[in-house]
Length: 325
Image (cartoon, rainbow, N blue to C red; front, side):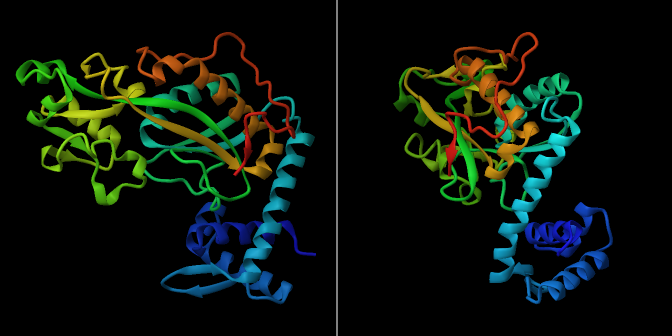
């Protein structure tokens, strides 16, 4: 029988596709990882990885089949550990959550501070990044993204809709031509994304709104765009949950320019049996519902659940609003 330690090494190499990266995650030497992989392949009598300097460790067909079984073993052991350690009653352990940059920095982070205060036995990694998070490589336990995953063994739910609007500083609006209708925008300058580096077409807010020549500042980061807008040189499309919390920004054509997007939350289906993941899952659903007005531009402050909130999600039972991807 292959021991758990060998499976753990295999999973890290399969997810990172680099022995050096796996070694860093495991806290061991590079040579230890390569030696353990060779031993596992000899034990199983198959080649699990195609190895090259350019692409690193690429799972073979046999490696992909073994990966599915190895993940099931990992999830079963995690659930067993929680049950035996008492974590089924008190969530504990470590969680990593990945999110889009603006939502992760502005909404998710303060909510996670509140969640960790309520569950001091838990530690959290927050990853607000301008790209997609890969759950297949276990970059995170829970991901919040602009699109629902099309396939994969994921538990998935629509977290919320949210709105974006056009904003400018009071100083900018005072110094430039008045904006009474959408055609007036041709006299103004804008801040936007670097088109060729967009990680999602859902970020193309300015297409059809203004000519590309009017976009004078571009960035891959929504937080950089927000800071640029505060400089008072151009207008910008921002999520309401970000702009509404800053009184220096004023909405422009709020009744005309209405952009709606959605956030989807998902995790690997095997993790639905772990209390720590489902406690956070349930907390986020309730906290986001509480902040509906901020997410839609009708409020200026973020709120956390009041009182001694406790999760209502029962381990092993799927939430009614969640479904497999």
